[in-house]
Figure (cartoon, one colour):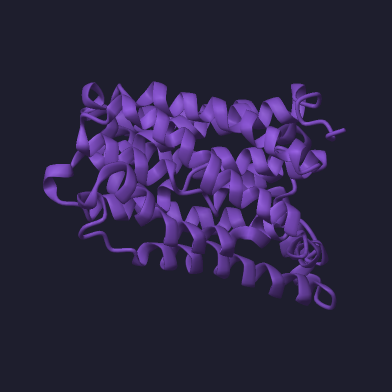
Length: 322
């Protein structure tokens, strides 16, 4: 069964996105309940992911300063330059602009780890870098918002969701996985949990993709006419950042797996964390949360495509730098 799932995982992910979109469109009243399931499904998925590799690899990843520096430059120097250029296409619409900036300026720290693992990247390094990514974006996001969109973009935003998301989506599943691995050295039931969670990786990803898309699709569909200008911008970002990620990896002389991790991190954004920030904006900026959600939908399709590229046809792109 596991072999079947692994062989057809990309088709299953695309099906989850498609079915989620259909459910979100046909049964919009289900969105509220499904939205409540996003964090539990993410926690389970991340727990399964963190169980997958012994944590001596994580300790080694903390010492890789070159990777961390490259990751920070990619996400907080290169990506903002790309975002600024792309955002000029909607600079005339304040709500779309602020929503776009909120989401594209914030690198993901949760499910990027899962997609990186699926793509064959060095997810342990990303996990080790997660606190740095969260802290730096918390410090720099207001600065970039102020520079790119003006003072209104940072007024009245509650930044607490960043801390809450880090504890809920990183610290909690990470702590549980460390405890499980420690118990597995002496307890058979803990070893069975580890084996079971490994087998559930793909089903959990399917459930998460379905839940996120189904809970958000209806609200986007209702305002699709207003949100259409964002779709090519988000698609362009998703196309550019993997290339820039590999370019940065080549300059930093990173191996294939860290290079994939850099490409995935540069592309994947912190949409589920910044959405509460967008919801806290004044009513006049009511399109901003939908701009964030639209990015999530575009990004999920891009992530599935990147996993396929890196695991099937992307070996030359992700090859070890010379």
